[in-house]
Length: 200
Ligand SMILES: [Zn+2]
Ligand SMILES: [Zn+2]
Image 1 (spheres, rainbow, N blue to C red):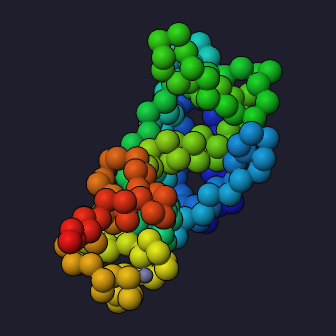
Image 2: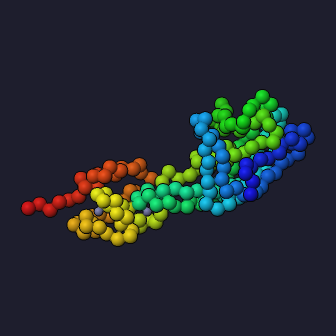
Image 3: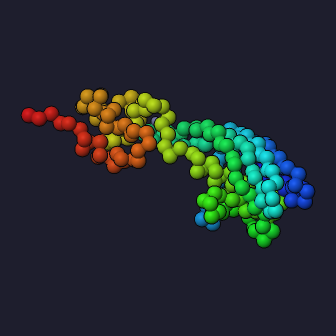
């Protein structure tokens, strides 16, 4: 297990030999807004990367990366392992003056990984790709019942007094966050507002 994934492009830059790197990672260090961050994987994440020379200082990186990230269930907030199978395909450009590798948007809108050290550290590239391609929200189970909006009871583990007061079908409707929508019902009392109270 490597601490930081690197690919050696020295001979590619000299003689256009293709380069290859593979291994597993249990975490990645990267920077965001100048702050050091760590992305942790629940199991060793396999990467397999090839870099082919194009022309001049340009090359093309392609490969696969299979990290399992940890996200929170959108309804009950418990941790959910989310296995990802990422396909990598990115232009690279060698600029001897470049410091740490970074992604730059080309005029075509395509991203280019610019690097200055031929021994390229792929940590931030892999971390950024993982974050961009992670789902926005996940459910630990499609049937997740969520938390009671009043007392916070995890309704997957049993009901609370509040839930006994209204029919179960209505509770589920009101707690459900349809996949792909933003967190429309995040305020604690949003669900209550929608309950149909019996008229007398
Ligand atoms: Zn859940
Ligand atoms: Zn409750």
